[in-house]
Figure (cartoon, rainbow, N blue to C red):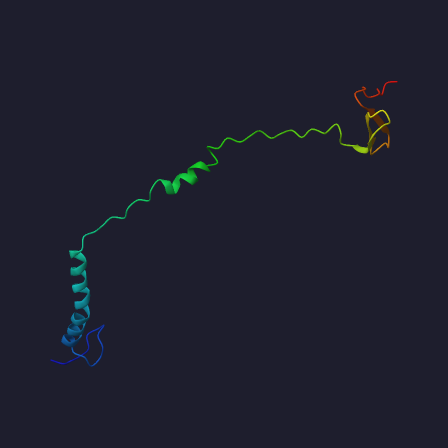
Length: 118
């Protein structure tokens, strides 16, 4: 019988040598699987519920949002304090200035402010 190489084997090595090398290489894997089979499987523990509580509180689908506040223009938008003093009688006087029209309005003590309608 001739020693022609079998397809898939290295030239010059007999088939029996290749089988021996493969068996030697496979022994550690066979022994390793036997050790793993002896150990018992421990399933992983679930995380505690406290870990997820912050996420539940911030859930955008359960949060109530406040309605958008309507911005109203302030009545004193163009007003500024011109001066403030006590007169000779001891009554506090305040002068309020309209910054756009430069109109001055004097407010004295408990007197009602002058009306704009004459």
